[in-house]
Image 1 (cartoon, helix red, strand yellow):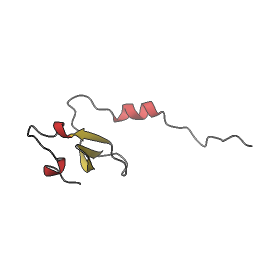
Image 2 (image 1 turned 45 degrees about the vertical axis):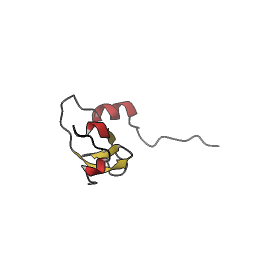
Image 3 (image 1 turned 60 degrees about the vertical axis):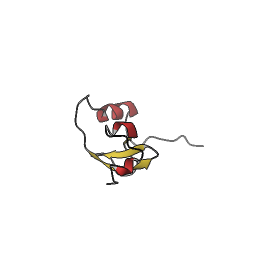
Image 4 (image 1 turned 180 degrees about the horizontal axis):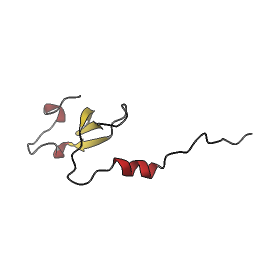
Length: 76
């Protein structure tokens, strides 16, 4: 049995996460990728298409009492 070989340097997952973090108050843009129960799934600009970059809980969307996030947001 042969040992697997590395074809090149691999990215440090922690360093990749640090590159994506933003400072409090910093503005980021993106799009609604979908909904998961009361959460809004978002894809941040600059991230690879496919899996959502994150999620925003329903209670953080607006001051209004919103039962379904799709009442105030649409995919895209």
